[in-house]
Image (cartoon, rainbow, N blue to C red):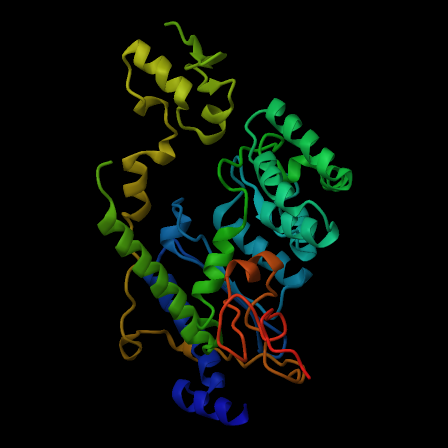
Length: 384
């Protein structure tokens, strides 16, 4: 490991030099992205502590990744600082909410910085907790639980919750204790639409896995160029894509659609903010198009607006025109504790479902056949 560290330092440069570049790098970011919010926090002895970046493209209200930060660890202080910078960049907007794996430090931070903002649970993390706590009925519970979490109406929710109780009453009690509003779409106090899990965070963790080993200057520049590439790629892919109360008969069931309020008793219309099949039937009856009844977030104009502001490239470092007082600023590497023994952990621990989903092939050590090993091979010759 020591040899590897020396080799990486030879290729990437001295980490100390990387920290010393941060003041002028942040200055150039602010010059290139005038509405951006970039923050550098140091300790009393000029050592690096935190960094926060929210670029112009994300601060203008698009659906790109909004902000990113580099901190010492996930603790109460770092999460609180992150949300304080986030609030400074974006303020407090209607219908804001957080979806997470219920990290205790994150819960404390949001309750202080955004006291009125709801904090919901990732439905996938709750399921992994159910698997580990309760040992029976997993096959039945898997489908029932996710269908219950995604239910559009209270009737469907209660019906599915009753089935969960039949399989294992302890699971129902566990979900009740968490709070239905934290994981159920129909009970949420703010419309969660399709944001039922923290998958986007896992996706970003996966794509930045190797970049997190880079020196801090290269890591921050990697994140900026990643946003630039995503913006340009998406921009190239964009293409053109009364009586307000109606009774709609669907088979033997009757649904009431209110086009004026964009609601249907099935729940899809108001939660997804797109016309459901019953609303579409009512619109066909009125000879109206569905475009006027979709959320503006789904329109072509909004999609184009998302990527219309380019992530401007930075000039080569040799061409940066930085004031002398910025060049004189000192940033030293953080003073951390002694490195822990063993290899640093790069990924979070996998759950049983994630390991199982990879479908590793088991092969026999004696005969090479698949679907069994040498211990479970039934036709192995008996020992004399």
